[in-house]
Picture 1 (cartoon, one colour):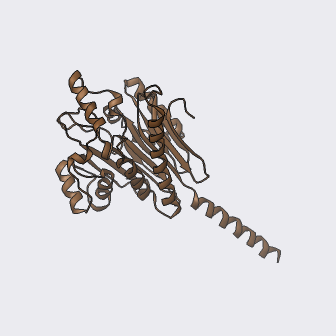
Picture 2: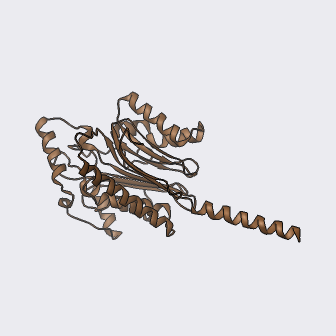
Picture 3: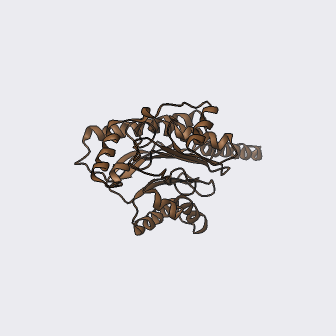
Length: 327
């Protein structure tokens, strides 16, 4: 009888522990890093940004509670930000030197190391959906330009005229740069979006979407669609999404380097992200990164005055911030 009772209670403990583990989830998002000031960003605009970040996190959490996997959540969360004119991704993408909007996106799954990306697309409404389609429905990792658009059409994704991406604010940014005959400022390029997710099955996924750099020329491609530079995920280490001056991130192999620091130097995801941001700073680059490991530990590091960012955990812990001195 005693043996039966012991076995019964052990079974209860095992069931409770397993259930808790299965229900554990975390979402971390960013909406770009750059030069931010309370003096230049009024309360109404700050509230607008925070509301959109909150909308993205809330949707993601509900999807996880309903049993969605990390990949689905990453895509849907990024869709919220792509559909908003607030961010330099999708609807709010910046303009190239020639007056077009060219978008990049990538996604990677930590369980399988499968990945997909698109770059230089002008007519795909939600580039992160195209990146996912490349990952799941093609033998390739990255497609670009008209080829990526042709593939997206075959996948049944929504195609829009380039003017869909037009916003007055981004167009004025281009005009100011053209007038001043300069290539870029960090403020003009702020707004790349990203998401990393740990789902209830213990799997990680990372995704990033951007409009690139204001006034970019010659078909320039940054780090966002490059696996290992702007995006990386591996269940054994962490999931990472980056935002900033892409050329530096590419040179550093930024996202993969963070994973390597976790794997080979046994750094925490927070320590690894901080170490990589230090490298970025020493090279003269600016930007930020979000990271998440399979235990639910998070990182939100940047070397600018602000980064749109937020996270939510199954424990109920939640935070949304903009400026460096917050939280």
